Image (cartoon, rainbow, N blue to C red):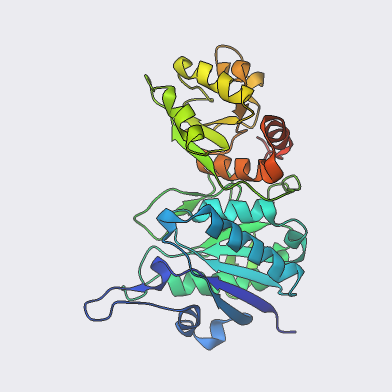
Length: 331
């Protein structure tokens, strides 16, 4: 039986041609035309999605892609979904789709892919990435894995994947975890287990969440300024195990009293324990109300906080949500 896969094409580098006199952006159908017919592992339906460049992807676009991927499987009966996406923020959009997939994760695969080289460049990586992603989305072995990223024939869990190199076609890695698998021909070869599925998400995610990178001597007024500008939550990218300057503590406490959650992530890889579980003086921000990101990098912590604040939730809802985020094995 031929499997049906939906391609949500958002353009970006995978679709760009910029040779002099040939500047253009390929449609999703044109991207498929770059793949030999005998390399297509499924019957593919294309939907072109109007989207910003990946480095400027709006929360509304991210949410729209996540919702459409879920409904394509649950409501429209597709066996899988492929999203072609710019690589700059691909991991954040993929993680949001993973958090919102719900029952769709058990019934079909949601595969994100992109390209580092433009469509008209020598040895463009987009066509192969797209062909491999279609094969992955059509393979029942990926059911239950949630959203994944397929690049250079490797499959990475959205929870673990990071863009680590903007200069080569092997731009993504799951380190320190192994990839979930690889695409060999038209089939998926499983390498390791997927991370446990996240807690069930409820309500409409909040789109206005700020992300600030901390630094010594940082003015605490920056935190209140983003809230005054409309942010319903704040993620701070700290250092080490989750440290932020002590000069921010009063502002964190104040925002917590205002029912605006402040989540502390780190620029480093960290364990999935909460801030309050760390030995002093590490994690002191927990004493003034900060919530630990539990191992999520700052960009994904922002996505998780968007989901936590669904339907007008505040500090209590955010704290409960991060406490229920299932840690990866060995976390």
